[in-house]
Each structure stands twice: as structure tokens, then as C-alpha cells.
Length: 157
Length: 111
Image (cartoon, rainbow over all chains, first blue to last red):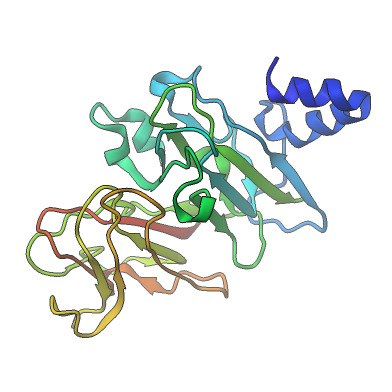
């Protein structure tokens, strides 16, 4: 049982509806706001530990289909031990060292002993809160297979 | 439609013995971040075309993270939502030749 299933079981049917809603960015059928738009309600489209293990070399785009967000946050998962590389599709296509094709790496936070326990985190926002960040253009690679950074994305719907 | 897209100039930037511009020709972006690469030993300087290896005219002096931890960063973004930061005018220097500070840049594109 993974964390989402545990959460749903603990909090019942209401929680199940919430969990299904906030993860809709991972559904290939979800058609979010158009790129560059700006709605009136902040909606979470990605949240929770992000599993990349089923993708080639463990490199996964944040969404499989274009989804336009106004805010993205990627956090090294406390307790996990590998670096997290963030990049573009070049990272998925590389034949060399994957992190050498990234544009950013996050340092792991395996025991909270460095940086006063804070986890390394990357945040990208549109300065005017328009839905301009295509989640399908951003790729993530955990250095250690099976580890899962914590990822959150918001749209203004 | 307008999207904020990763710039082709993003990625590890190889620095030899002198400050190098992030882009060889004029490249306007909305957001830029420069960080020392995790595990490398270089102090990283960021500046304009007049950046000196002695830290003269440096906009930022970033401490290395040879043993890990959150990397120091120089970050700038146009809050007006325009591509106004010219990467050819931003120079980076690493105190150890061959080190590769990480550059992250995003630009507005119209599709």
C-alpha cells in the first residue's frame, strides 16, 4: 500500500475524492487551461512523491501530455539518499551521464543533518501568475532508482 | 499561446581560464539562475562583460558545495513577464578550470 492509498484508507471516501482531484495532472485525459491563460482559482494538479521508475532510465516528464501551470515546486524527499536532476527532454534522450544533461541538481536530505534539516528545493513561477509553464517540458531523474521527489504544481483554472 | 520554456542555454556551463558569457550571441530570457555544481570545488563568479577573475565587478560570488548541501545561487527574473535578460551579457567564471557551474534559464515563447 503506497502513501496515497494509506491516506485514502485513513480518511475515507472524502479523502479519496480529494486525492483523485489533486493528481489529475498525471491523467492523460485531463485537459487543463490553455498556455498563457490566467484563471481565478488556484488548483493543485500535481502533488506528492513522484515515481519515475516505470520510465526509460527513470527519466520522467512531470506530465505525459502538455499541462500549463503557474507554479512548480520540486523538493528532495527527506529521508532519501540520491540527488535529483531536473532538465529537459535532452535528459531523456542522453546516452551519457544523465545529470550532465540537466540544468539543476538537488542535494539529498537523508538525515536532516545539513542545512538545518531543510530539503533542497527548486521552484519556478510565472511572475504574473499566468499558466505558462508546460509541465511536459520538465523532466526529473532521481539518481537512485525508485526514489521519489516531492512535486507540486498549481494552475489558475 | 505564450509559454515559459527552458532555454537552450540551460545546463552545465564549461568554464576554462577566463569568464565566459552564458550565450555566444544575444539571447533574451525571463529567468536566470546560476549555481555551483554539487561536488565541485570552484567558487563561482557571476558578472557582466567586465567581470574579473579577481572578483572585480562581480554581481555575485557563490561558494562551492564540495561535500554537498544546498548550493548557493544567483537568481534573477523579470517580474514584468518579459524576456529582458540577455545571456550574452552575463558572464560566469569558476576558479578551477574545467568546472561546470549549472545554468538554468527560462524564456517566453509564443507557439
